[in-house]
Amino acid sequence: MSSSFQAPKGVSEYVPPRSAAFLAARDAYARAVTRAGYGYIELPVFEDTQLFARGVGESTDVVTKEMYSLTDRGGRSLSLRPEFTAGVVRAVLEHGLHKGQLPVKLWTTGPAFRYERPQSGRYRQFYQVDLEAIGTEDPAVDAETIAVAFDWYRELGLTRQRLLLNSLGCRECRPAYRALLQEFLRGLPLDAATQARAEVNPLRVLDDKRPEVRALVADAPLMIDHLCAACKAHHDTVRERLADLAIEWVDEPRLVRGLDYYMRTAYEFEHPLLGAQSGIGGGGRYDGLSEDIGGPPLPGIGFGLGLDRTVLAMEAEGVAATAQRACDVYGVPLGEAAQRRVFTLVAELRRAGVAADMAYGGKGLKGAMKGADRSGARFALILGERDLAEGVAQVKELATGEQTAVPLDDIVTILKGKVR
Ligand code: HAM
Image: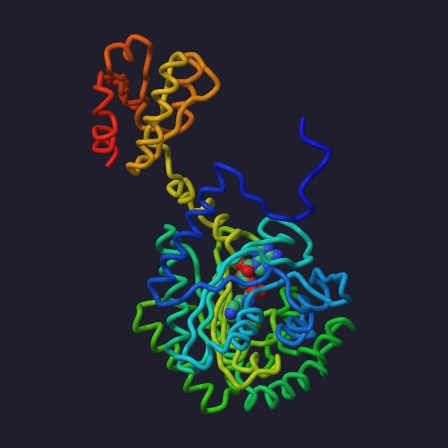
């Protein structure tokens, strides 16, 4: 029987054996970004609500409908982070990191919170791995972020992800395009809610998934055809650098991100086996974000990749199991004196770098061997009273059943050699 409690609705949790893939993915991410020169940043899980309102944008669903906000006992309005980027830029400015060498390259990971309708792959507490390169407009860095994501996916064994790429223009060219698009949308028989959205954020109407809306906006003007010369040059260089790295992408002129800070490069990673929640990650440039939150002009680019959806993609592609680190050696003591000896042997094996575990609770041979099988160990280390008297232990290779007596003093060295 379970307890009277359940986890809050819509949170993602990881327990063994599934948690092994989650951890392996996160560890692999840390290696991939460290190789690419990104330093780690650990941020608070909650921030001033206004940081998200001004950073992520007052007109976004994330801010208007999905934030977990609270007033603390000191009367401050705080919100659980719905994403990382605003917090990273806040921390860069607060700690003056932008006064050193640029770009400031940072990564982080952890839970984020959005009050969304829960379903497979969409949670109210979910996990992201995040990366931000702050303080440069160099389009090569845009391509670098994408390359880092692809390296990570490849290391996890994923092959089916697709990159969708677009440019959203800048403060120079977007306002004119926005007016043009609004003009176009006003002439369409859209429902009242969509018409209202067209007034606040017309680009989002292009991203509407409903077929009837898609049909109506099929001939809408596209940002990509109205980029200023600087944005066009930037976008061309990003594409050129991606081609240099043999990274494939799909041009998606209707791609609009759900957060307001994006400018120029915007991209998403999609996985075809995940159904409705196919967006496994997304990112782009946010050259105006620093100013939006009261900082100096400071361009930036980065991404957030959904760790939960990445694990689902690993499972869908059948590469999650390889993430499991099995136990190498499992101790099977028979009797109290043997238990004491196996207990120290297991500790010595671990110190020697061998993954080792043992049967606890005074189990008999049958029960303990079942534990050995379940642990996934390659070897059982069986120690009975008679073995102990003779100064040996039985090392049994579980796959073949082959068993040899090994002197207790040599156990660690020999097993260490065998599991290499
Ligand atoms: P985002 O597209 O809102 O971007 O989220 C990035 C990824 O997080 C999504 O592609 C998805 O995989 C995952 N995700 C988002 N919401 C949920 C949810 N409710 N449940 C499960 N997974 C989810 C950002 O958050 C930006 N901060 C990314 C960024 C960083 N842009 C520049 N720098």
